[in-house]
Length: 152
Length: 49
Image 1: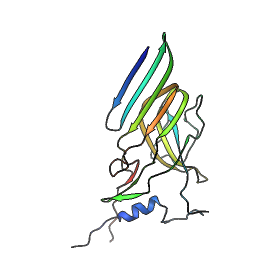
Image 2: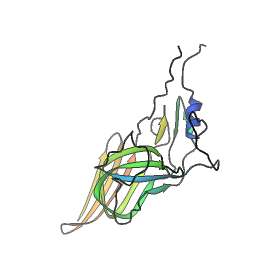
Image 3: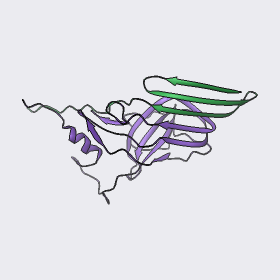
């Protein structure tokens, strides 16, 4: 057995759980999990790795859609497999009886507890419109290689 | 008239349905199942020295 250089897998899991603070941290009033939301964005948007927080710019609008998006009710407990740490919401994101006439292709996951509404991740899919109907985003399998959020 | 379709690729499996009265679209719903997400970080630590 020899030593090997690595980022510890447990550290990756700890990141999901907010255990480490290398820089100036935030004051947390509770040990409870933060609340997160999912918001939809137009094809014309420019969200990506550079997105730092929720913004209404380029967010979809239409009948039945509330700015800021929908609450993510809960997450699978962050876990590890191999050298990956990952987590996925436990339920689909759903918008019912909405009309979203301008094409959208992106969902932003962001921290709704943080005062800055800090961004978590951006996910894209094929362009969609909805007319007096429902839009559902079903989550991928919560496993290494497929989970919605994964650090490998 | 009812129209249906699917998108199936590496990232998503999507089904959609549209209903028309004449040529007017009166209903469109879509269901996107995300399949595989990109890895957001490289778990590589820097070397020392």
